[in-house]
Length: 340
Image 1 (cartoon, rainbow, N blue to C red):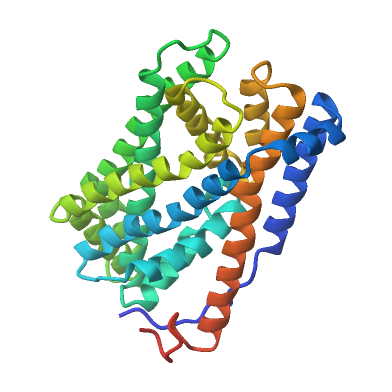
Image 2 (cartoon, rainbow, N blue to C red; image 1 turned 135 degrees about the vertical axis):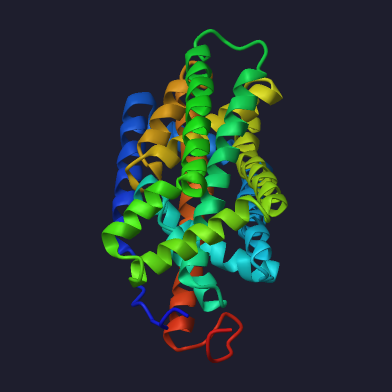
């Protein structure tokens, strides 16, 4: 059994500041290069609010779906967690994801939560890594499907979706190889054990992690398959937010509109800047330039950033602080004392 520890969780103010500053700077550059801010504000006032609030509902509803991605895998290890608890934790994890490079900051929080819930740290890490790789596979698969099934694709957008198709196939191969390597590379782990000692705590942790991960992909394969399907559902729901925002400007036909929303969503995952700030705006600028008027383009970027970045940071940050205070006092999410 792992030794109980209470890590000192801190709000990542530096990541929040960097993300907000870079995002604000990108917006300033786009405003300066496209249109007069007064025209942008006039366009924002004329934008149909039903699309804005509908998009926000989809983005927040995606937290509920994403919670079940982790829930499916913990069931394979014999643990059941209420959906609402997973939603709360995923909301806080989403905040950390938005303010850390490569959108990877929420995993540690989920590991700690699952550890408090009764899993060993090695098992919790296997669940989070498995869920993360399932999510990345789902994202690559969704990008591949949307880009490969487009019709009436404008010539200026074709290179972007060609890059998505090629990148998705390469990424899927890498992810598949990585998972097979974890499960099948016994010689590699034996070599690691020979170096660190088969009786050491590190060797025991690695062996337990590998055993849990192998269980998820073999005996728990149906749970893992369900996890991938939930991850696809999560991205569909999440990108419906961008789809609705674009619908407010009546651009493209519906399937291309959704494919463009997926294209915008891929950028933050591979950006070293927290929240994909700058890169995301740059891609949206390049794709929509010539499709929207200058003031419409700047308005869309402001609306999009508000829905997928600023509001989730405020809500997720509040949830994160709530969890930190609860856990620091020795309470669980429901207010009771002790782990769970």
